[in-house]
Image 1: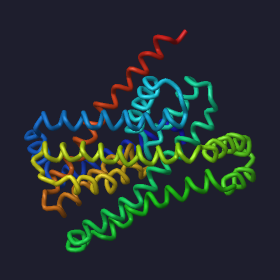
Image 2: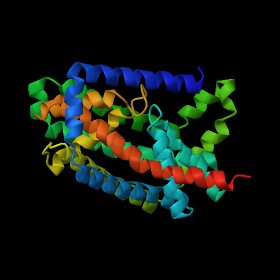
Image 3: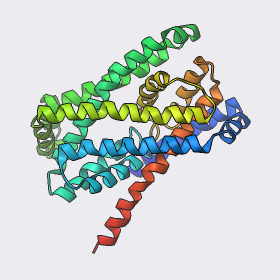
Length: 308
């Protein structure tokens, strides 16, 4: 299937799911929730997200090198693309762009981006488990434990796949037996080589920055929730974030469109904040993030100007 057609179908699925949720809850409730949003808190949330994105670009800088400004703009553009692609795979644009800037192996950079994602998802595994424990009482009373247990297994699955791809020869053997894929074996080997050669100190820095990024993004979520009048505490924001961002990586729609809003409705309902507030909350998180990530268009404009 053509990739564009696949993306259109995925976007259509997400829109249909989102439209059904809004219709089921009542469009008036969503509009009412949006209308009472406090703009100053929404903008403050965007500021924390901007700092978060800068921290995330530092991760690319320490693992791949290059100009920090260029890496930051490339990262922002990759995040913008990730919002429009199933499984957020559009973020891999950063590996190609950084390779052009640094004259380093594209396959190696893809391996490093995959490693960074593996670190992030490994952290999410523990955070999701902590969230399940923290929310266990309200989850049990609403009969929603099984749903969020499944959600929590998503990062476990992703970490397992990344581990097999980067640190075993399972993928190599599979590709070697398929003539159409065997020619790409050298690229896989370069990915594996780059991820295995990363220094332990650099890996420790990546873990630290990932944890800092989690706190900063949780601050974004905290202020967006308060902009809606949802008085959650910061610990709740910290543990809501891994549960719901994990859903965004399920490759059924762009960045989990529709499905994440559904998860927000369920969790906010469990917390006694209302399903409509949950849907509105995720929509505002998306809008807030896309607004900030739009700075990545600076990278596109700059490259177009420099093109022959």
